[in-house]
Length: 109
Image (cartoon, rainbow, N blue to C red; front, top):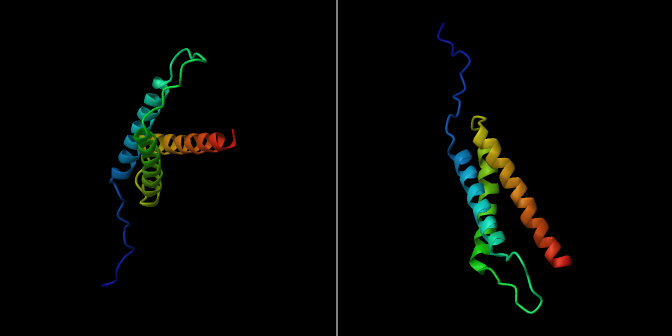
Protein backbone atom coordinates (compact mmCIF):
# COMPACT_ATOMS: atom_id res chain seq x y z
CA UNK A 1 0.00 0.00 0.00
CA UNK A 2 2.85 2.39 0.62
CA UNK A 3 4.15 2.25 -2.95
CA UNK A 4 5.59 5.30 -4.63
CA UNK A 5 3.59 6.10 -7.71
CA UNK A 6 5.14 7.44 -10.84
CA UNK A 7 6.82 10.68 -10.05
CA UNK A 8 5.56 13.71 -11.89
CA UNK A 9 8.33 15.57 -13.65
CA UNK A 10 8.60 19.15 -12.53
CA UNK A 11 8.46 21.36 -15.59
CA UNK A 12 10.98 24.15 -15.90
CA UNK A 13 9.05 27.40 -16.26
CA UNK A 14 12.04 29.70 -16.14
CA UNK A 15 12.75 31.66 -19.29
CA UNK A 16 15.93 33.38 -18.15
CA UNK A 17 18.28 32.07 -20.85
CA UNK A 18 15.72 32.60 -23.60
CA UNK A 19 15.26 36.25 -22.68
CA UNK A 20 19.01 36.80 -22.33
CA UNK A 21 19.55 35.14 -25.71
CA UNK A 22 17.06 37.50 -27.34
CA UNK A 23 18.63 40.53 -25.64
CA UNK A 24 22.14 39.63 -26.80
CA UNK A 25 20.93 39.13 -30.36
CA UNK A 26 19.28 42.57 -30.29
CA UNK A 27 22.47 44.13 -28.90
CA UNK A 28 24.50 42.42 -31.63
CA UNK A 29 22.08 43.70 -34.27
CA UNK A 30 22.43 47.20 -32.83
CA UNK A 31 26.22 47.02 -32.97
CA UNK A 32 26.12 45.74 -36.55
CA UNK A 33 23.78 48.54 -37.57
CA UNK A 34 26.20 51.01 -35.96
CA UNK A 35 29.03 49.57 -38.07
CA UNK A 36 26.94 49.88 -41.23
CA UNK A 37 25.86 53.44 -40.36
CA UNK A 38 29.49 54.55 -40.18
CA UNK A 39 30.03 53.64 -43.84
CA UNK A 40 29.61 56.83 -45.89
CA UNK A 41 27.01 56.99 -48.65
CA UNK A 42 29.57 58.02 -51.27
CA UNK A 43 33.19 56.99 -51.17
CA UNK A 44 35.72 59.01 -53.15
CA UNK A 45 39.00 57.52 -54.29
CA UNK A 46 41.05 60.36 -52.79
CA UNK A 47 39.49 60.15 -49.35
CA UNK A 48 40.18 57.43 -46.87
CA UNK A 49 37.60 55.05 -45.56
CA UNK A 50 36.76 55.81 -41.90
CA UNK A 51 37.75 52.88 -39.74
CA UNK A 52 35.26 51.92 -37.02
CA UNK A 53 36.57 51.52 -33.47
CA UNK A 54 38.10 48.13 -32.76
CA UNK A 55 36.14 47.84 -29.49
CA UNK A 56 32.93 47.61 -31.52
CA UNK A 57 34.26 44.62 -33.47
CA UNK A 58 35.35 42.92 -30.26
CA UNK A 59 31.95 43.63 -28.67
CA UNK A 60 30.15 42.14 -31.69
CA UNK A 61 32.21 38.96 -31.47
CA UNK A 62 31.73 38.67 -27.70
CA UNK A 63 27.97 39.25 -27.84
CA UNK A 64 27.65 36.78 -30.72
CA UNK A 65 29.50 34.11 -28.75
CA UNK A 66 27.50 34.81 -25.59
CA UNK A 67 24.27 34.68 -27.62
CA UNK A 68 25.13 31.26 -29.05
CA UNK A 69 26.02 29.95 -25.56
CA UNK A 70 22.75 31.31 -24.11
CA UNK A 71 20.78 29.78 -26.98
CA UNK A 72 22.36 26.39 -26.34
CA UNK A 73 21.65 26.75 -22.61
CA UNK A 74 18.01 27.66 -23.23
CA UNK A 75 17.56 24.46 -25.25
CA UNK A 76 19.52 22.18 -22.92
CA UNK A 77 17.79 23.49 -19.79
CA UNK A 78 14.50 22.58 -21.51
CA UNK A 79 12.92 25.97 -21.07
CA UNK A 80 9.38 26.23 -22.39
CA UNK A 81 9.03 26.97 -26.08
CA UNK A 82 8.19 30.64 -26.54
CA UNK A 83 8.48 33.09 -29.38
CA UNK A 84 11.46 34.90 -27.85
CA UNK A 85 13.31 31.61 -27.38
CA UNK A 86 12.99 30.81 -31.07
CA UNK A 87 13.51 34.39 -32.26
CA UNK A 88 16.63 34.80 -30.13
CA UNK A 89 17.97 31.42 -31.22
CA UNK A 90 17.39 32.03 -34.92
CA UNK A 91 18.82 35.56 -34.77
CA UNK A 92 21.91 34.38 -32.90
CA UNK A 93 22.56 31.60 -35.39
CA UNK A 94 22.06 33.89 -38.40
CA UNK A 95 24.30 36.57 -36.87
CA UNK A 96 26.96 33.98 -36.08
CA UNK A 97 26.92 32.77 -39.70
CA UNK A 98 27.04 36.38 -40.91
CA UNK A 99 30.02 37.26 -38.72
CA UNK A 100 31.95 34.05 -39.42
CA UNK A 101 31.19 34.34 -43.14
CA UNK A 102 32.34 37.93 -43.30
CA UNK A 103 35.53 37.05 -41.42
CA UNK A 104 36.26 34.23 -43.88
CA UNK A 105 35.47 36.51 -46.82
CA UNK A 106 37.79 39.21 -45.45
CA UNK A 107 40.64 36.68 -45.17
CA UNK A 108 40.12 35.30 -48.68
CA UNK A 109 39.49 38.58 -50.51
